[in-house]
Length: 106
Image 1 (tube, rainbow, N blue to C red):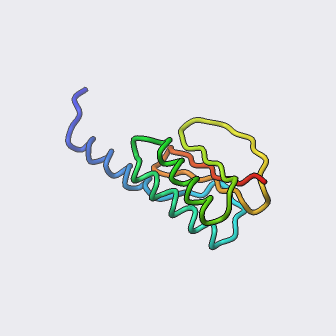
Image 2 (cartoon, rainbow, N blue to C red):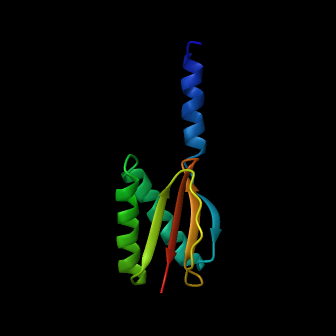
């Protein structure tokens, strides 16, 4: 089938609707959660084509702001099981299907 102009408009609308961050799970305090979420959104937008660079940016910023031993995973379609410090985990989605997991180990 040929793609119509309406199909492109629907794709643009879908991306716009999915551009907000969706917190799946967190145990962070409110202030840390908001700062981390904003940092993740900024990094994912800045490095939209390079998840490794986005993860590096998030990790380095979190290490500076909240102390060392932060870990970051960004991608689609992955599972995980991690041990983390209490009140230091954020698992969110951005852009519809891009997952971001940020946690701190001692």
